[in-house]
Length: 377
Image (cartoon, rainbow, N blue to C red; front, side, top):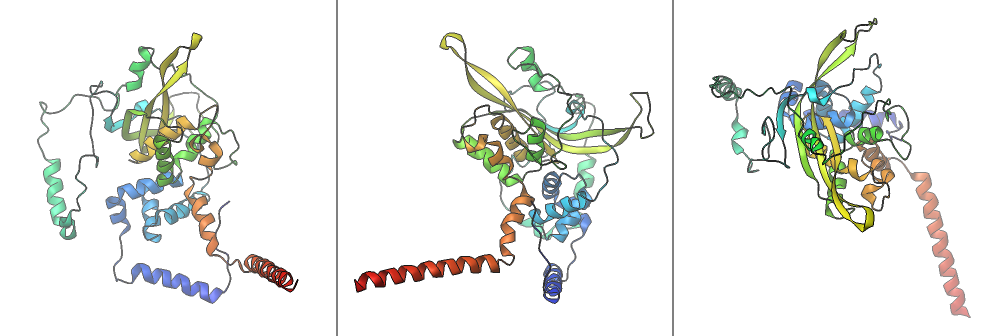
């Protein structure tokens, strides 16, 4: 369930809302939505992922309204999402069709198509850049012009087709090191329309994970790495790029190619390789590779990797640890549910608390009376 504030004391509530706006604008500056959209890519990607709504501009507005609080921004986005009609369903999106801008593998040095570093913070020194305090639009425009006009001659250009890069794991399948994955064409569950039931299907687990709070998903995955069902996976392949989305002709058509391209969505996709020891005949043990999968909106690599870890742990047939327990993990990673439940403690609890207080007073009074009777005896 989600908790929201109840109305009461109208004048006080209205003044509280006015004060909230005052706190946002009291320095006399207005944060432009365009500035948020163009300069807070990481926060926008996080909010879109956790709200299950792909709209950079709506995420930017929500972030502005929430004063940068991601949990509140996600709440606003989810509330708005619930009002939207669902007019169409897209065709199945295949990640093989991704227009890749970043693609790495921690499992192999040389992969077909090569490692593509793209934009990443992996190699920066994590030192605060104080020059950003005085950065101007003129400087930025000049830097952009230099960047976009840099030499891209045919000799320097890589001929790799970034929309047809082979999957790293396909080569392991060809060697028989990973079992072939059969297509599951069953309609996936929809956790936004039906309550989650356990055991949850894999499609439901992945939905909850991808819209889970980034920090919590990461923490649970970290707990698994540290000892709760300890495992040490390796990133088989991580991709960041745009996926094309198509919908069928709304008036109907017998032509399977008659579809409308409605736009791209940027996603991060990860396939994790997880070594497991399997007992064979006559007590023989062998190492096999299992796969954990993660995908989420935007460039959100840590979360996608954490998803891949938890995708594997939550598929355990004999759960022993909290990180393998579907109810424990899936019920506790939702930012709206968690924030709402904790925040509702600020709401009036006068009656219940007075009841507990009365019980405490009666108990203390009874203990005091009993002690006095013992003394008199």
